[in-house]
Image 1 (cartoon, rainbow, N blue to C red):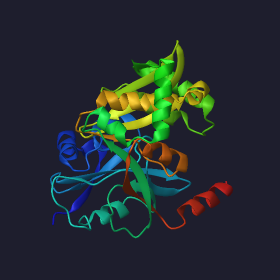
Image 2 (tube, one colour):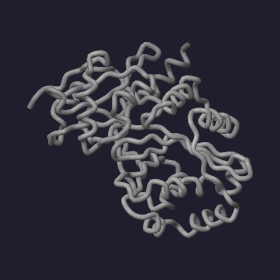
Image 3 (spheres, rainbow, N blue to C red):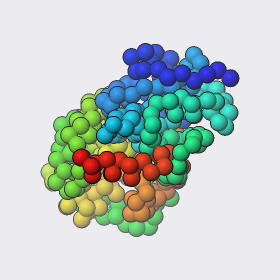
Image 4 (tube, one colour):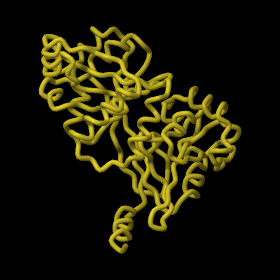
Length: 298
């Protein structure tokens, strides 16, 4: 079997890399060089042979520790391959292990690594049928919310990056998350790309909800959502996602909800008939505890 090698971003052949991602059964927007660049975090890759398989990875340094991690707007990475790989994925574990001393990252693949691993859940819905068929899987409560929206006269609108800026303003007002300016700027960068689209929901010129979608060959990914207080009261997000599913129905793509471990969000995704996918969270034993200890010592 050919060996995996570590390649810095500047040395990656974009055409060969993206062709592997496009042809892989794991195909996802997260894997393409142009998306990884738009996100803005420095990345490097493990490459098998002459681009038979590739794996994008992110490495950071914090408090003197070099660690492998996920970055904003890339929920999980994957080994993208055009060939059948052994269960161990060759010696990709050696490539990964050589990158850092600490690890806290996500992979679609079940790779044999000497790290703690926890199974995580993502939820997807196949859109390869008419919307009438898709809606047959909706929960009764969801149908009730959507019908209420139809009576209200909700309006679906498409926006560019300006729409995303408004969505971010709403998100910051409604959510007390401690997110960095870098996180928001990365999201804005993605929103300017041709594979991204912001949709909004309004009623009588009153904004209710927004979503940012990113599309690749086989998936439409729900990257970001924001909703006003009035939107929550009127079940705006329920209606907005249904309207988007109707727009893209009858296409051979998966709608990727990006998953969650939060019970309320899981229930919301499953109310559309979404099915669970499993991915894997790899972490050094005690990494978080060591980082907290270092931070306390500052």
